[in-house]
Length: 393
Picture 1 (cartoon, rainbow, N blue to C red):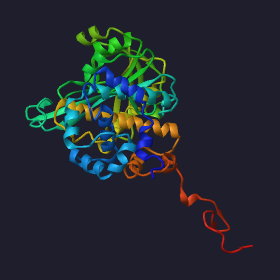
Picture 2 (picture 1 turned 120 degrees about the horizontal axis):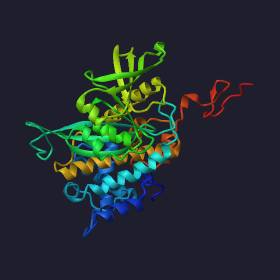
Picture 3 (picture 1 turned 180 degrees about the vertical axis):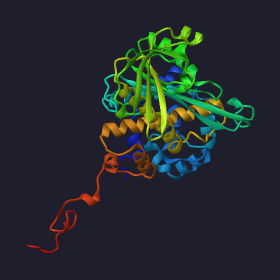
Picture 4 (picture 1 turned 45 degrees about the vertical axis):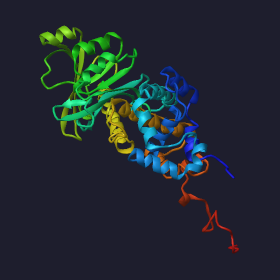
């Protein structure tokens, strides 16, 4: 007799299926489909992400080995390598991109009150990209260099909760700075970027839309000091200046004042120079904002290590983007569950627990609750979960 739900089914219960069906209908994902729907595809690929499957054949073997549990996991079709390969090639990847945005919107609402190391009321975003190397002979559409293929994952991350709010997948040749053209800035928000995004015309457009930016300056920056503000040099600050650009083209692109903050990083034994259009925050806060940008680097490192986005189950552009978007959906879904269950464990620990318990039938909260058996109550040197065999009085 079947009793209870599998851990995998409990995790997938957190999916907003109504929104998923809207995404499927938007791109006619199930048009003339008699078996193996888009939901079946999503669940199989999510299973692969949660359990670190290496290939389509690996997914098929593992799921077929537990055939009696598939229906109760929500998978209502026959699992086969050919079915998975075909759907990854043919089903529009935008279905899963749109659904990932639904989950991202839900996660950001849950994490909006979290802190990220800087006491600030405004939203702070970090914009950066990571490159995923591909074999050019297998992925000819992903040209990067003459004998090398790659794709770029351009990400705008809300630093509260480390939730990506915007992701764009391009081939490796697209320069990072072009993402500033597709970005829709939020007035009053901060955008923290590295030197690869230093384009004064684009930064000026960002400032004109009432958004703030913090960026590292290049060593050959030509600028004229207008005014110097007092700083506490014991904090590592060297100077806090209001400047105007002096280069002909740079002044033409950014004809307004900028703030230049010099800071000496004792950890790296290096002097850093930051540019910003925000004049109201303390200079040390500007340096802390840039330091918090490291969270997006940790995000890229985390997803490359713990999600299946470095080796792919298909070679077409559609298959690669489908796999990446489903991986991102799984990451955000785990973040949502972690917040809603109010468990104090890392996403890495959460994924490790799920990877070995997906077929078990036990309450999910029981598995992920931070319960330490070494801290159980001990009375008269006798653990509380042991029967009292002797009277110690």
